Image (cartoon, rainbow over the protein chains, first blue to last red):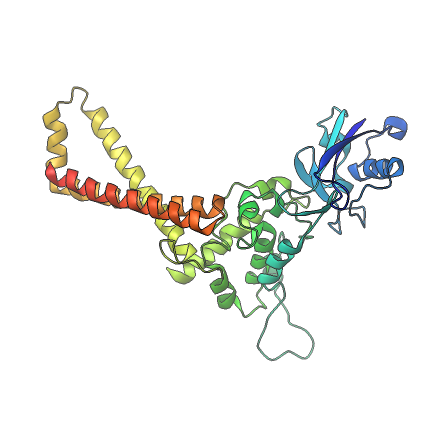
Length: 236
Length: 115
């Protein structure tokens, strides 16, 4: 199988380039893209990429696989090549600076995440044991808390490409709504006030690239819609 | 909170509401004009002139004119803040856009009230 990989080492290369590798997959099996990367790494140990859990939980190996962002560890090559099993093109996630090869600098992504205060704030006295929720209130967090911060969605979003310093991005906004929807959080008004400017939420144009690529099957566009409705209800 | 001094309402929500509301007004205006044209197959100039000579039509047209200017401003502002990274270039583009829209508005009012 032909594997074409984006290579760039700022210490030695003047510009990024694509390098082709001919990889033989043992037994011609349908393996994951991460397995192919491991085979490439055996051939060329200078290749750099992030990986950790290899089962779609840690979110380390997000990359552009044949033009679509995804996690290398849970994307079978048959899916990436649409069954043709002929060519794999691997590039770093788009829109953020490349540190080396497939490794990107995620500082801006984390900065946006930090901005939405991704933790529970409750200024009422702490109860003796724990803050309880009804099963219905807990159910509101389903589809929100599962985000693993792999950045596949935010780096697939043109609004995030153009304004990564101002637009929170789908991942951060999904988390913002996770805390807005939490019955135990008492900072709803303050959180909404932080989001009502023209960039943080309203740069979303609803093109749903984020939904298309999310490896966990989450829907940031819907969460953004909920935030807009909350802002509308609060300010109209 | 990201501050901006050049957008229409100083708030993302305000701009968003303006954009949606003006879109509805423009859709209604377009549908009405389309309906009028379809409903009068052999229309003469006098009918067209008669339509625009009525006060309610002038009000309706003025609302649509203001709506298109507001809609275009929010849109052009968004385009400029997406693609134009140099502050001076962005501000220049915004000034030119605002200038054009203002001219269109005044010119449009002038045309409407001359009927």
